[in-house]
Every structure is written in C-alpha cells, then in structure tokens.
Amino acid sequence: MSFHLYGKEGRGSLPKFEINERLNDPSLYKPSSALINAVNVALNLGQPLLLTGEPGTGKTQLAYHISWFFQLGEPLIFNAQTTSNATDLFYRYDALAHFQYNQNNAKALNDDEIEKLFVHYQALGRAIIDQERKVVLLDEIDKAPRDLPNDVLAAIEKLRFDVPEINKTYETTAENRPIIIMTSNSEKNLPDAFLRRVVYYHIPFPDASALLDIVSSKVDAFAKEDLEVVIQHFDGIRKDKGLKLKKLPATAELIFWANLLKKLDFNIQHLTEPDKMGAEDKEKLMTSYSVLAKTKEDMESLRTRIYGNSRRKRR
Image (cartoon, rainbow, N blue to C red; front, side, top):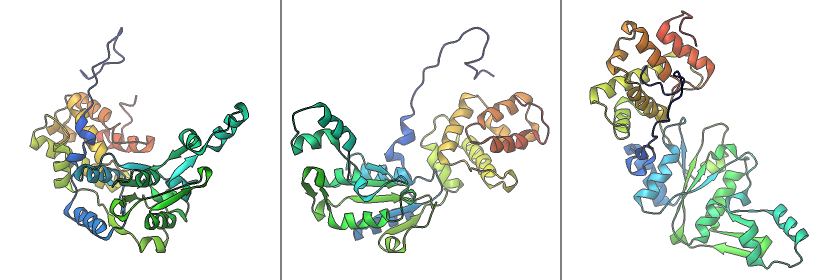
C-alpha cells in the first residue's frame, strides 16, 4: 500500500499536513428548508431553539452558521455538565484562587480587581455584558441538572444577572437579546415547563441526496459518480441491521472516510462489487473502516462484511 508512511523499513519523514478549512466553514453548512423554518420561528418569537438529532447531524454547527449569516461574530458556547448550575451560565467565581491571593498578599483588592482576576464570564453572561446581539450555544443541555433548563429561560426573560462577589449587576436591552440555540442528545427527558417555552426541531439524518450535496462541498477531487458510490456504501453500512453497530457513523465520519479513500488510492468503483475485490483492495477498505467504526465490536462487524466469517487478515 503506497499509503504507508509509518512502519516501513528504516526511518521515514512526516507528510505535510494540510487542514481542510472547508470542514468547519460555516458558509458551507446546508440547512434543510424545515430547519430554516424552525430557525425563523425562533427568531420571530424571540424564543430559544432546541435541537435534537443523532451526533453528526449538524446541531452544533447550526449556531456557527447563524452567526456567520447574520455577521454576529463567533457564537458564545456553554457546554452543560452534570454539575452545572444557573450561575455557571453567566460566570464562574474562582473562590479558591481569591482565598489563596488573600493568604499571600496584605493588600486588599477592590471589586474591579477581583473581577479581573477571579471572575470568569461564561456564554450568557458575556452576551449580556457585551451589549450586542450574539448567538449563544448551550450544548447538550440534557446533561445538566433538571432545574437548569428552566433557569435558562428565566435568565433569558430577565436579561440581567447579579455578581454578588463584586456587588455588580449586568443587564441588557431587548434589542440585544441573545439568539439561544440549545442542543440535546435526548439522554434524559427535559421538563415540560421548559419545553412549552422553546421552539423545537429534530434534525433527521441526511438522505443520500443531501449527503451528496454536503460531502461534495467539503471533499476535493471526487467525480460525482464515485462520490455517489461512496455514499451508497456508507448508507448501506448504516442501514445494515445485521451489523448491529453500537455507534452509527455520522456525516463527519463520512467526510473523513471519503478523504481517506482518496489518500489510499482506493478504486471507488470496487465498492459496488466487494466480492470481487482483491486482497490489497480488501486490506485498504478494512484500513479505511477505522474511521467509521469506533468500538472493537463494530470493527469486527465491518471486518465480517468484507471477509465473511473467516478469521484471516486479522492483524
């Protein structure tokens, strides 16, 4: 395999790694018409948009696309944790560092100095302080304690928050109301009171036509007929119930896989007749599956798809 760079006899040199800037280019995001409608409903009502969908369907990237579309700069991001509370949405106060400072320094700090050193503003707090419209992404809100989603809505309605540690209050106007995008992986049910006050949309996994549109905008040097074969093979893996995959590969993995097939110099048309592939092609394909499979069991399932139940070619 000409792809090999590591593991050859003697020593080698690293290849020049080039970042594909298009992978995360917000201008290339492809929202469906239904998703566009959901965003417009949320914007017109001034309500948060709650997104669900399996990983890789573009929930997080939507926030970047909206920010790009309305020229609002980078979105402000809050990653919800199981320990998150309402205050964390606005700021975090490093009480331990402040205590250590006081222990080692005789000079007392004023509120502005405390704020600069020990108060760290988070996404929603930053949006209010900046006094300009921002997109705020509250990622994986379902991971947070059950009360947090309701606290989010109360905070958005007030558009203000207090920082008692420095005796300050920050607030903004309705004109600067942040655009709130929330994502959920549906790991647990969200409160009914919360759901009544948000706009909801489930992003389905893209069909073959949408995948072709997405991948063709992000992957170079693929003829359309080859890319259609790649997507057909990928779709077959996702829909093959016999594989019993623990984690279905998502759009991001499809893009990386297509790139890797090119680097492997794999004949794409061989995917249409896997039974007729030679040993080298099977080895290349099996190598490429490391991008799609993320568990030992899934890798074994895909190995069986190439070699059947034979235990050969295990390395």
